Amino acid sequence: MSRKTVLLVLKWLLLLSGIIVAVWLGRSVFDMDADQLRIWIESFGIWAPVIYIIAYTVRPLIFFPASLLSLAGGLVFGVWLGTLYTIIGAVSGAMLSYAVAKGLGKKIIQKEWDGKAAKIQLQMEQNGFLYVLIFRLIPVINFDLISYLAAFAKVRFVSFASATLIGIIPGTFAYNFLGSSAGSGSPRMILLAASVFILLTIIPVYIRKRWIDKRQDELE
Image (cartoon, rainbow, N blue to C red; front, side, top):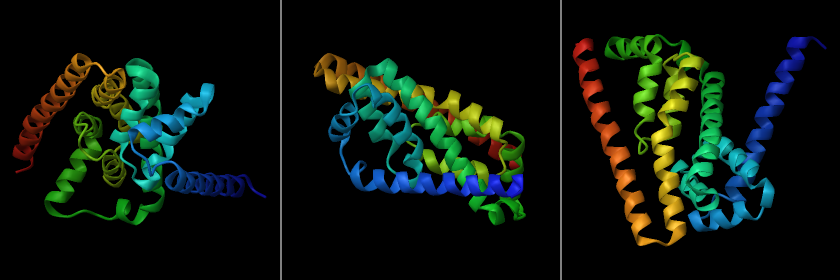
């Protein structure tokens, strides 16, 4: 058996394994609210961080809300460790989504885009880091959709991964802080966390709007 065949078999085995894990998680885990997720994650004891990161990595395959899992991470691990584990899982999940889109969407990726769409595609291909970074900074935009669109628009993998890593830090911190404060039961902490969340959401939205307006002027 050639090396190419072995790599192809391994690729499909990994994909199949990922689908099996995602289906299991979807049926037994992800049909929960944040507090139920907290209980489930805590049940793994010292392995809880590993299970949490794995769950976050395969989460995009079933489109489970990233925000809910991030809140659960804050409840279980606190704001700092929760943010760290969530970033690791989120970046891993984003790379998985990107790879799946690249592999299954080759016809879309190879297709020549026309008109304004072609200009946008070219801009994203050439300035992929900035585009992905801006969209990642907005924690309310669908996380997985950004990954798939980046792959379809031929954003380079290194640019995509690095922009994702940097761009999700504020939103990830905000969600984990909110989850951690809810677990503390302190009204003052909850109010502070909510204020931080709103602030970290409004500022990137403003920056994104100014940046997109500028790009649209360049495309016209």
